[in-house]
Image (cartoon, rainbow, N blue to C red):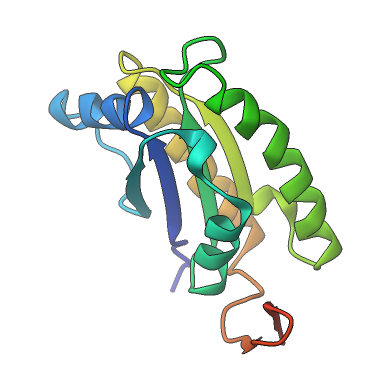
Length: 147
């Protein structure tokens, strides 16, 4: 039985979610491993949201936003671009492979790009295997999951 990863995708409402919707309306198939969550802006995706998704059973998290310079809230994607590398360093420090979090820019007209991003990410996570946080217990005092 092969491993099928569960991926939570936070998609900005204005570009990436519309790009994913375009993929659907264009009938471009992509792996069903992704649970899409629409957010107003990629800048609204906090590291706590990502950690919560991983802690609650996601094998990986995809954050998609408008291309740099196209954010409807002007600086949201700039904030995300700065925040994700810091989050990845924190994940590495916790023993979680930073490749389990990916940031991509997908515009409303890039349905095919969204599909390629999802396919590539699913394959990468299949190579990594299940999240080490699966089956972990949660220590409420530190908000860090331990095995």
